[in-house]
Length: 380
Image 1 (cartoon, rainbow, N blue to C red):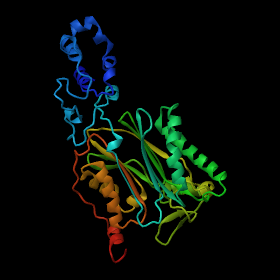
Image 2: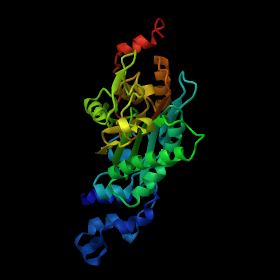
Image 3: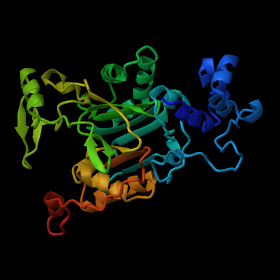
Image 4: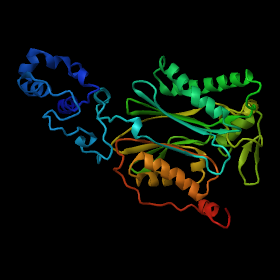
C-alpha cells in the first residue's frame, strides 16, 4: 500500500478504530529521524504543529461531512458506511463495514399450510458475520434445530480453526449428528424423515466470503450486475450425485412431474436430517466455496430457498434487486414476485449489500416459459 493511501485511511478512520490510529502508523515514522527525513508524510499523520487529526468519522477539518465509501470515488454513496481500517490496511484496499441493519430479509408462507423456512443474520464474532437459510421438509423440526444450533457449532470451531471452509464442513456434520441424538432422546418428537436444506455464508473482515450448502437452497453474488452462482443444487439430476447415491445402495425414481427423487421420497441428495436415507447416500457434508470480494464491482449477496429458485433464475433475481433502492425493499419485492409468478412453496431471501450497491443498474428482463405456464390463469 502506498504511503498516500495509508495516510488517507488513517485520516478517514471511524470512531471504532480511532483509538488504534497511532498504533497502526508504521513505527519507523514515529521516530524523530524519520520525521526529519520524511517531514511531509509525518505532518500528514500527525497534523500541523504535531496535533493529530480528529479520531472521528468526520473530516479532520471538522466540516461535519461524513467520510464515506464515496470518498474513494468507487460507488454512489446510496448506503453510507464507514471504512474498516485494520482490514483495509491488511489487504491493501479500502473495505467498507457491512452493517446488519442494512441487510434485507423476507419470508413468505406461499400456498403452504406452514412456513418451514428459517433464516438467520447475526454478528457471530468481532470480525465474522453469519447469514443462513434453512428450508425444512417433513416438518419444521430440522430447520428449527439448525436455526438454534448451527451458529453455535460454527463459532466453537472457528475459535480453533482459521480455515472457514473446514469450520463450516465440521459444523454441518456435527449439527447433523446432534440432530440425530436429539431425535433419539425425544421418542415423541418428529419423525425420522424430517430434514432441511442449509446454505450458510460467513463474511470475515468485510472481504473474505465463504459459503457452504446442502440441498437446493442457493447463494448468489452479484458482480458487475451479473449473477455469480456460489452454490450448485444437490439434486439427483447431477451425474456425480446420482452415481454417489447408487454406489451407496440408493436408487433414483421420477414422479409424475418428471422430478427425480432419492428412493422415491427426497428431491435432494444432501441434507441435514432425513436419517432414513442416510445409508442410501443422502449425506450432510456440504460443498464449500471461498471468494474474495471486490467491493468496487460486487453489489450484494443473496441467499434464497427453492420457493424463489424454482420460479426465478439467478439473473432474474439479480436484475430485480439491482432496480431496488435498498436491500429491504429488494427482499420484499423478490418474495412478493415469486408469489405473483405462481410459487406454491415457502419463499425466503436474504440480501446483503456490498460496496457497489446501487452502482450497477439492470433493466434486462428474462422470459421464462415455465414460469409463464405456471402463472397463467388457465393452468394455475
